[in-house]
Amino acid sequence: MVELRIIAALSENRVIGRDGDKPWHLPDDLRRFRQLTDGHPVIMGRRTFQSICIKAGTRKPLPNRHSIVLSGKIDGFGDGIDVANFFEEAVDIAAFYSRDLDDVAYVIGGEQVFRSALAYPNTNVMELTHVKGTYVGDRHFPEYDQNEWVETNRESVVWTPEYTFVSYRKTA
Image (cartoon, rainbow, N blue to C red; front, side):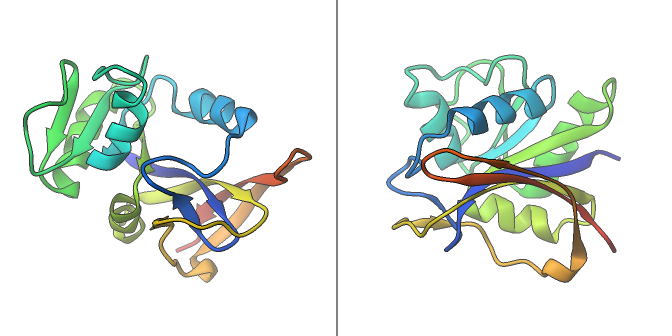
C-alpha cells in the first residue's frame, strides 16, 4: 500500500493560494519541493495542475514525477498525465507508479485534495513550510487535529518572509 505524504506551504492564517498562484516566492521552498517529490508520483487537483503546469507554458507533467490530476474532466491535460475522478482512484494510480520505488506518493494540493488526503488512512507524513505572517488568499490549508501529528524535524530559514520547514509524522 502506498504511503501518502502531504507537501504544502501555508501562512499563519493557513493561506496556500490566491488567484491561482502563491502569495510569496520562496526559492528554498521550491528546491525542497523538487528534492522531496523527485521520482515520486504526485497527486493534485485541476487548479493546482493549471497553476503549476499551464502557467509555465506547458501541459506536461512535472519533470521526473508522474502527475495524477483529480478532475471530472478527462481532456486537456496533455500526454503523460493521468486523470482520476475521485481521490481513491488517484491513490490507486499512485500505488501503481510507486510500486518499484519506496511506495511513497506526494499530495501537492489544492485545498480539497489536501482535505481528502488528511482523511485518508495512509497519509502518514506532512512536509509543511510555515510562512510567517498573514496573507490574503482564496485557498486555505484545511484544519487538522494537531494531536494526531508529531513534529520530527524543523529547520528555520531567515529570509523575507521568514519561514520554517517542519516535518510531521502521524501518531495514530
